[in-house]
Length: 294
Image (cartoon, rainbow, N blue to C red; front, side, top):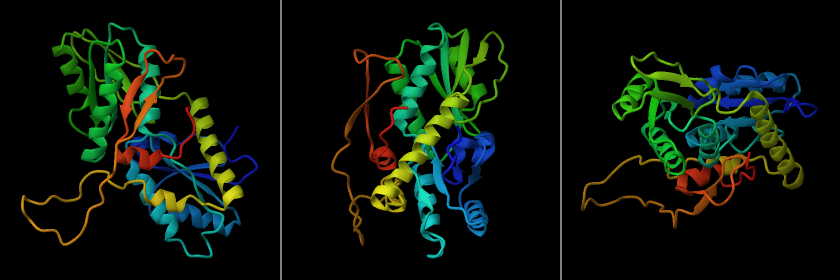
């Protein structure tokens, strides 16, 4: 069932985790995958001219809170006459979802295989988040080696496979931490396989439909279009500048009061072996209101 059935179109806004839309070209009728910025504005303009109202979903798995904030700023900048009826849904996923989905994929992988968690490169803070995610997959899993690689960045998948081999692995399974599938480089003396998509197509459409349904329910009940909440998604994500010791400040910084503490469970897992993940500010700002465990 398409997320847009009977309720108008859905625009899936894509960043580096979805190849800026290339990895999400087949989400079903009524769903348009576009990059943010001008492409999003053009898509909304076409819908407005045809009299349709859209629900916009930021397609991040938790590593790109900037996509959420940028999308909210784009929607806020629309002419006042065009803004009513355009809704911003909560992001597709959070880092907690990503950890659970990767752990579920890892559980379907032979325990003797090394895991190479692979995703398109983002900015330094997005990439650092993938190391945290992979560390938790490793710590609460049974695989002896878990490494990280970035398509379009360093270390790339070929280097990641080499590192796994140096650590004694004879078999490496690529786990995609993104919407697309990574290429599987050939490697001498190492058996390299890919685990398949992070989410099968039916699950991807189901989660997307849930985000859209929640956004429309929020609008119906509270007339909340989601834009104000989306503007704060990237707060405290990374550091825009630093000051040498003793340098005065002509402005103030907001410091979070705590990290929060949450649990992640892969589908089908019990609570006896749950993973503890410390929520950093940019993680729960991007997904604090997400209620789904999908």
